[in-house]
Length: 297
Image (cartoon, rainbow, N blue to C red; front, side, top):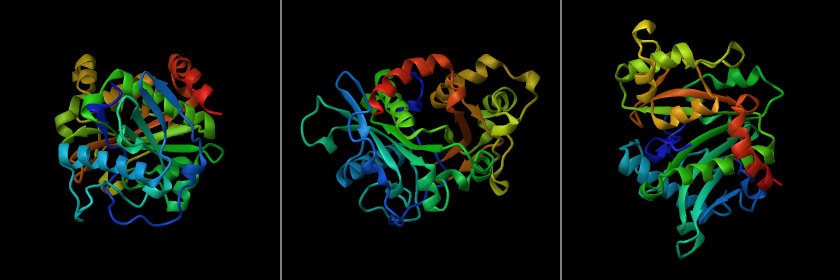
């Protein structure tokens, strides 16, 4: 999974929502408190206190705002990327234990995890502003959904080892909570879908979800992905042009929803990823699932 994260980061989700956190507190601190994975000096676990969550939000701000140029209508004088969903999410952390100082200053990467029951408490998933996720969930009332989002890694840690550590943690989390389906958005840079016409057209024809798992961009934001004749698409060039995160998800076995969305706050073109756990490629289940299961108790 060396290419599972574009330049070490992505913002999985919809339009930026800022302001004070409200609503019920997530039971994240009641979840698994031990390590969810380890590779070398890197340890993966959930945030255990507010200091660690705030440190993760600081890293998100440095990457999304300082590095990628995200913008907000609100002043963020604390230089933390935060929204109303943060108190409801579990915050997966990668820590480098070779660093000195308090644990919250050893955080080098983060992933935000929103379980279905907490999304219900929040009035919906974060990405519902861009995609009709609620309809997808309603078609599968017996399955448990998990939304992945706000993933980022500090520049010096953007490596295969860090990505593998994160996926160890995700697999352990899936096993601990009995998650059936992972969903979220993945982003192409810029706000012009035509700049990615070949890659988006390829995905529209070759990577779409089955009817049972289909999810569509909301009507007011829908933009078609098929923007050129399919016979003119060079598959190799199309795949090469995809952000590493998208290629990584497709390699695992993820499929793509219908339509893309322009997110002007983050200057991205977003596609929707659907990953039923039982349909993920067996080699990845074997590679990550064994370690994930051992940490999931």
